[in-house]
Amino acid sequence: MKNWEWKSILVGVFLFAVLFVVPAIMVQKGIEIKNNPRYDGIPKIEISLADAQLDNIKENSKDQKYLVENLKLTTRDGVSEFFDVELKGRGNTTWGQVKKPYQIKLKHKADLLGLGKQRKWLLLANFLDATNLRTDAAFYVEEMLGENFAYKGEFVDLYVNGDYEGLYYLTRGIEIDKNAVDLKDPLSVLVELDNAFAWGETQYFVTNNGEHLTVKDVRTKDSVDEAMADFLADFNELEKAVKEKDYAKVTELIDIESFVQYYLLEEFIMNQDAYFTSQYFYKDGPEDKIHAGPAWDFDIAFDLWNGLPSNFNYTKSLGAYEDLAVEKQYGNRSKLFAKLIEMPEFRAEVEKVFAERMSGRKQELLDYIAGRAAQIYNSALKDGKRWDKLNFTQELKRLLDWTSARYDYFEDEYGREF
Image (tube, rainbow, N blue to C red; front, side):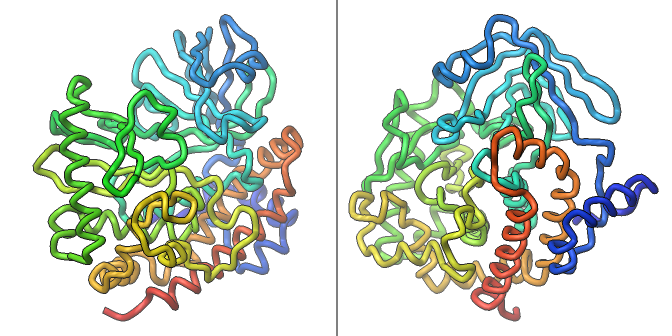
């Protein structure tokens, strides 16, 4: 993992200033911020719209597309400029907030901020999260677990037509691509379980237990029906095997490691969108098994609303509802993982992966979150004033406290010697 080093006297001066402002947080948690990669400020994206005003974009449908006259990305290494860029809104619940998330589509693929070459890029608003750190922290846990196609992102300050729009998180979208979900088979498919918004799509599929699945992407555009028929047949078999507690059949149908990694991530961060919406699976052709992931959508994770104790087992709480049928579950939440964790064999795999990938790394995660907090500190304060958000330093302290306690709970619940 990353072993940050001090880069210059300026870094030390910057971090000293940050620690002076929020000493209670860092001292109390015993956290050493080991690096601030961009001490001269986070990158800046400036968008000049060609045919619209941002207020009008915010009032219209998120799916309406607009031409960007030019887009400038400024880092400490210089300025990159892009033309013929397309801008649109994105998100479901997040599009309904006052601070909007956006998608930008470049004319040609480009590697922005070392995140890999892509045409489509997302600017996540993180409006509900006063720290702006939850998505980034979840991606780090995903990386710790070694999940295939784990996502990354970078913070940017966004300006549109010269006006400051706030602190945003630049990342790639969920799609099949060399630098996203890299699938090869002509009949590969990327599927979203979405029991919240599926019926708003032009096409969706329903499993035998009532789960709503949508096609997020396919390798070959004219193979949707064939690829999805293959996926749906296996998913229905998986539901049946889980209901009958046939673990041998389960292992024939799914990539166990990816499901274990997905469970550990979503449960650890207590993602309240998990098993409900934005839950992804993929299958790289008919000969492949079903894989869970990539994990996505974390802005209400890590106990955002300060309502659940750090030892609350979110997935197991769904187990009180015995029937797998969606309409008989709590809040239309999938019970697939709740039933998997009840299987001793799956539980043993969870404990094994936790021991190998996460156990004993609490301080590393806390250091990472604190380091990112130092990096975005000034921008987070400015963003908070722009959008009247909760106090950044207080929410950062709560995030660190909760994450520390959550890690302790996981060590007790899943940690054991192998």
